[in-house]
Amino acid sequence: DSGVTQTPKHLITATGQRVTLRCSPRSGDLSVYWYQQSLDQGLQFLIQYYNGEERAKGNILERFSAQQFPDLHSELNLSSLELGDSALYFCASSRGVAGAVGADTQYFGPGTRLTVL
Amino acid sequence: KNEVEQSPQNLTAQEGEFITINCSYSVGISALHWLQQHPGGGIVSLFMLSSGKKKHGRLIATINIQEKHSSLHITASHPRDSAVYICAVRSNTGNQFYFGTGTSLTVIP
Image 1 (spheres, rainbow over the protein chains, first blue to last red):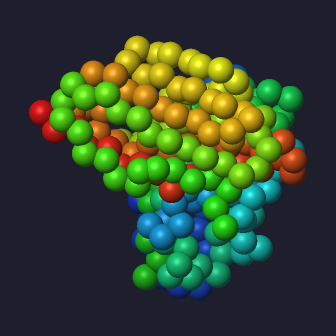
Image 2: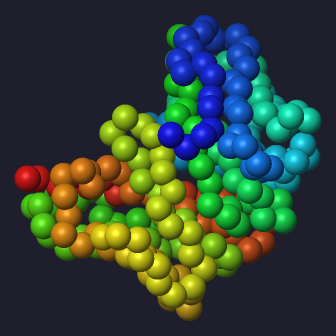
């Protein structure tokens, strides 16, 4: 158990809908990362937050947004869902070395499997 | 264009064999990560390195910054090592994180 929790584990929804994925980091970790893993694209970095502020953006679509709250949990919002958004979404956390992405060991949550029908 | 390339894509080994997985990257980096993804989907970070070599149990990771290359070695492989191994790099410009497509390892008893 990495100490990172993600809810829900599975989510099935329809095209055009909006969903929110939630992540609670390990105690004491300030950085939260979101990743998407699809069958055809592999793992992709979406976005990183450090202590409530956005620090780095990867291949995140404009239809997606995220935030990190004062208690350090994070939410990833996916809207106007398309079939191609079906994927595993991972959250990871790290202590947060100067808030820089990938600069320290990350601990991954179990993922949320999103299916868009 | 992939910033991170791994080889081989698939690897089958007999229990006890020495295994090497390679990772080459095209961007300047400040750190390289090796991750293990189990068949159930969970991801575990194995190593983070920026130079030299690290060892943890039967796993060894090396990096050559000048060659832009890293290797992950597994000594005395075991069926429980069967997983997908993913290389990821933190670029030293633009604060980005890039992943390889993974190497699927199967170790046969």
